[in-house]
Image (cartoon, rainbow, N blue to C red; front, side, top):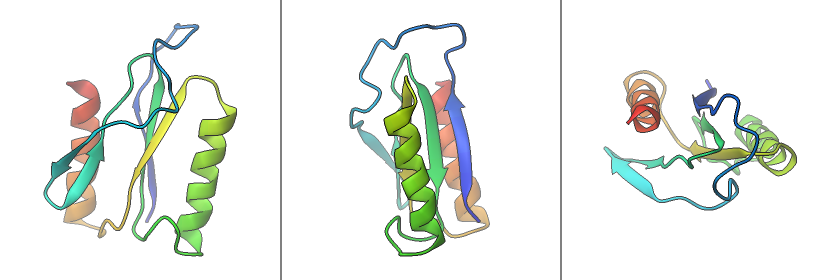
Length: 102
């Protein structure tokens, strides 16, 4: 199962305060790298069950992720790959949400 989560949105803001396409630092939680958010951007995270370049469904979703980041203003995207369904997926999703709310 592939999840796309909006981590945080800046309602009513007309311009970004940062470079939404910039690389961000990640925090290790368990065996996963949880990406950071960028202030002033719509931060969207994708959680993939396989590698982002698997040649199948996950890669197709990643192509869409890249398209969104390149074609929409003020959008920063990130992904966590090879996440097992179930408890691992829940842990990653909760970590992504907590990262946005802190």
